Length: 278
Image (cartoon, rainbow, N blue to C red; front, side, top):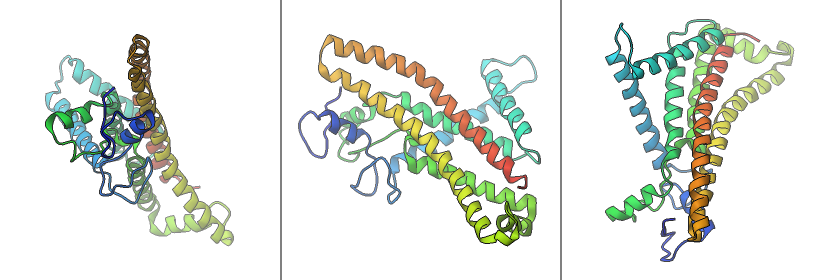
């Protein structure tokens, strides 16, 4: 385990200090915590944008190298992914999917890439910052944007905006407002209908972000606990770290892509519901 300097201390951190340090964000304030909407998390912003750019480059390369002949492995994998998303969107969304299907594909690739950052060694960046002598500039640094509730709620907020946009586009502003006040109990229960529909929109957004955050945060925390096994400086500790880390990393591959798939599917479901009336 790396001997990380925590808040100016010059001793090897305790287990709680080690975990608390790795759960801190590079932000515009010294206040740290797993959930904090009052500050900007620069590491989350940086890695979210970086993975978005990489995802766009991957899809651009696939489109650029696509051929009508026998596809290579890379082209075949991308074609299978595109076909899977197209089939799911066709089943769920009954309407114009010219934007929705590509948006769902973008969500899947983006979230999968952000989740995959969890496979990087937990101390790789703290050790790199020490090696370059810039650790004072990066006292905290978290790599996985989806293990930050600020990041996942931000993505789900984008989905909420699309839900509102398609609700108004498909039904018209008047029809959408009428549904907002009249569904599901009729216009005479307008105040209750409005409250219920606002709660429904908010619940969809919050649950979408919380589900992804909860799974990725738990996975990141378990990686940190496994890394602490190496602090025992014994053969059993080292063996336990390697064995447990390998097993959890293999299992985590399923979680990484499953959570991306679930997020994509819920995005399609919510946009599909926006096309339909109560």
